[in-house]
Length: 407
Image (cartoon, rainbow, N blue to C red):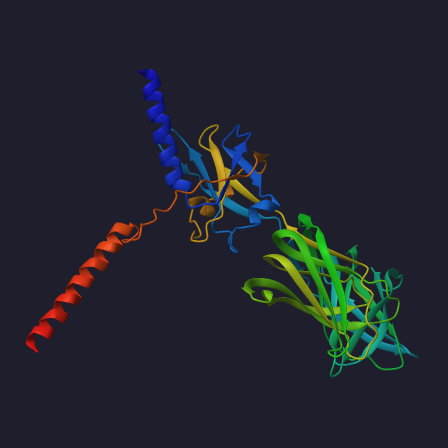
């Protein structure tokens, strides 16, 4: 009797659990739950068949009498930047031969690390020196020969007038530019930037093709990652020593269609920018799930760039969840009809502990699907078919004899 009862309970438990998670494609056991709060990093394989907005990710506790959905908070390890503008006064503009000076006063003892300059001039290439002083008598060099640049023509519209330096705390700051042309400073911005670095997963580039299209005056770089993963960062290693400024656009495959000639890929533009020889060629953009990428560089009539290395990264995605007790938890995913869940935990994030223990995931298991019932065709049995044909012959024969008798 106890054995039968246990068997019935197990069957009932399996039926309830399958009904709850049967719409999902895969599951992984969550191992190591030892307390109420834990963090769980999503591995790359989870994103392979997930929806673009990750709306189909769920955590379930499978119990003998019920299947309980566990609320979670999705946390993306982006960089956090706090920018605080600092008040200042432009107190002096002077010239000495071909050197032009701009002196700023910061009335309060503020720390700063960024200056943004805006000039009326266009198409310039200058070297800037930045100095700091407490009394305008003794000056200390902060930046030396820092290059700023502006290019505007039919092919390029690029401007770089940003000064970034280690934290500094002076009463006065002086910018000097050695050039025959008079710099016309339109505006300036002084501020302090505090960054919390992002945490990334590096995506391996499994396939890379670099093609120069002479007819279109473009270089097309096609990249294929090992899997469909979140991407939010791209960097290029370009060893060319000459100056270059090339506009580009980064695209990713949004969907694909199978045709008689093979797969046809539909691309969407993810990011547009300028490759240049002054700044680091690294770019950050909104996260998307992608496997195939295309970088289109506008070479115009210039020599193609040599691209030595490509690095693609994506922010780490993790779930923060509160588990009511130990054991029996599964992460499930892969449901094209799932909607974005709404949990109360999203409104009480300040109650989450600062220190969280990470839990691990087991191997990916496919969730069995209930087979669809196939309705047998009405005339699958040949006897039905022969019987119907016989009835048709009798009816037609009757009509024929009736018509002949009338004649």
